[in-house]
Image (cartoon, rainbow, N blue to C red; front, side, top):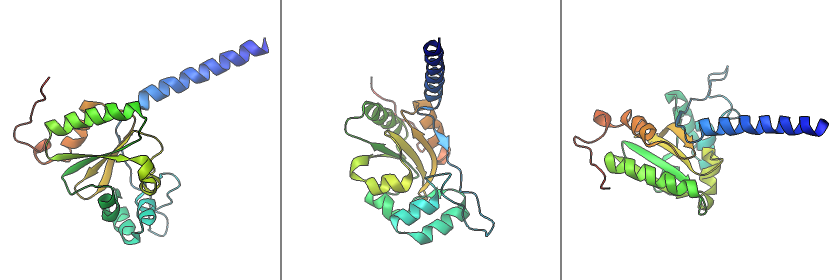
Length: 190
């Protein structure tokens, strides 16, 4: 009887985890700013591994942390972006992948299709294994992880897993001039 009860508990917990994972996997979530501490500076990065303070200190650009905390979003230091191959653009989709990751290939396809439709946006894919300092600085826990960066290098949204094409387009529409970055969106060939 105890074994049956233990099996039932494990089954319920596994089902709950599976439902939660299905619901959150690939969802583009807004990135919140670090909470200010009583002394007026940015709060601890313990609650958010992607806080501007941790990203800037890990990249060796302490001065960017203060300005990012004041700006209310997670700014990635320009030196770190340059090291990852990110060039200035109105919006950038920064994808962290690994070599043997099937969802990474699906994410590459989705983001590539979106950038083909919205040419003002850029897609940069980074091998997480080759850029461990950036992975730690940006709080990347698994691949694929996609960061949506605005023109100032601030992380405005992030997704772990394969994001939906409509979600990515909606996130970029908030950042691109004219809601899409092009007078005439290009269509993909079948």
